[in-house]
Structure formats: structure tokens, C-alpha cells
Figure 1: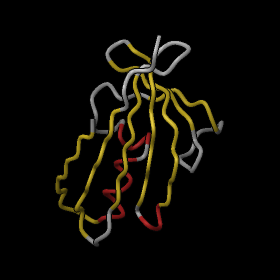
Figure 2: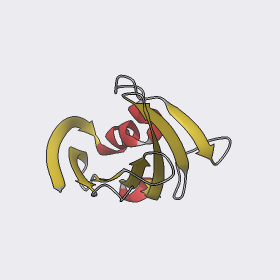
Figure 3: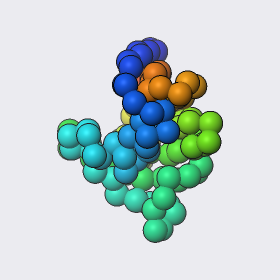
Length: 113
């Protein structure tokens, strides 16, 4: 299943972009609190890993691509016990000088138990 969406935020794209790194999202998304895994001390970068508890379930997030200069971040997340029960991929790109944000998310099928 693929879910896509788009929304617009008025503001400088460089500033808006900071709202979508793991720590920046905590400033506006209720309940979003990261538990850093890599690197320590945590900073958003390609291959960074962190956990988030969402509705009592721990999700593990990996930053597949983080390029502030291009205003691009791509993440993947999964939740579950030993096997990944569900997976989500998010890609955010800000291509203009104003905050026109496009978010795409794809959910993977449950893995066999």
C-alpha cells in the first residue's frame, strides 16, 4: 500500500527543512521523542539510527539519505519484535525557496510470523 500526500508551509525552505529532521520534528509533533542509537552524540546524518515509541510500540528509524544542502531527507522505519512487522519509508524534498513540502510514505506488508 502506498500513501502519498503534500502540504505547504509558508516560510524559508532552509528553516522548514529543519522541522523534518528527527530532533526538529519533536518541536511540533506531539509525542515525538527520539531515543538515539547512532551516532552518539546524535546528529542527523545519512545512516543515523534512532528509536521512537508510537502508541506503545517501538519503531526503529534509519536515515537513508540526509542532505540539508539539497533539502532532502529519506527515512525508513520498522516496528515489531525480532521480525519487522511493518515498514514505512518517508521522503521529504524541498525544491523551492519557499516551504512547499511533499511527503510520501509507503507501508510494507506484514512479515510472516
